[in-house]
Structure formats: structure tokens, C-alpha cells
Image (tube, rainbow, N blue to C red; front, side, top):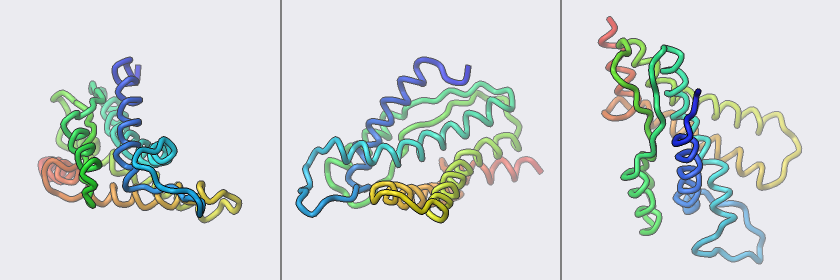
Length: 184
């Protein structure tokens, strides 16, 4: 089974919390007469539609490739990382650094497999960037909200792709580089 019950519950919980955290950074289009509220479910849902797939599918990229290699892989919420995100949101800090989840993969992968597994997460973000770009380029009729979703999704996924490939621990880029170096 690809997901167990705990992972499904974690997926739901992390999606809602990510929506809350990102609601301060991802703004839905507003009507002229509409005022911003401190806590707005519409903003949370809008942010969740964009941020949750970018983060969760990134982690599932790692999980899927690990499973293809015959390895056990389990999706976990990183509670401390989520707490930092919530605190940053509550303090209205202008910069968001977030590590909300991870996939635990027991030892057993070769160095090359580890590099491929590490690259799988950012590769998903690159695919989501490409899909968003295609939607904006070829889908001619869409609402203001839909257009905003694709524009923000494109930017967020490109940012996550680039950021995660920075070769410093514990980022994926370091794991990719380390795995490649140790493979040869």
C-alpha cells in the first residue's frame, strides 16, 4: 500500500496547517470592497490549493522513487518545522523558511539510489512548475482566481525546485551531490 492510515491523516493535517501558514504569503485576488481579515478561511483554502501540492507532492516524489527501488518509505510530519512556520506566520515575519515534512527511508539504498531519491522531490516541483506554465500558456479561459493560482503555483514550485537543490545539508541538493560523489 502506498499510504497507510497515519500518512493519510498526516496529509490532511499538514495541508490545512500549510494553508494557514502560507495564507500570509499567498494572497487571493480580492474585490474592491473586500477587507482583509486576520483569520480568513477563504485565504487559507486558496493558499492550501497552491502550497499543499507543492510541498506534499515533493515529499511523495521521494517516497515513490524509494518504493520503486524496493525500499520502505514513510511520510512524516516534522512538527518542529511546522511550529516554526506557524510562529513565523503569527509574528508576521516577512520571510518564510519551512521544513514541514520528510520521508523516512531506512538504510539500504546505494549512493546512486540515494541521489535519485533526493532529486525526485525537486523534480516533482519542476514538473509542477512546467504544468503551471502550460496551463497559463494554453488555457485561454480562466477566472481571475484560477489565473492567480497558476501564476503563484508556477513561482512557488520554481522557488522550491531551486531552493531544494542548494547543495548544503540537509537540503536535497546536498543529498544529490553526496550520492553522486559517492557513486563514482
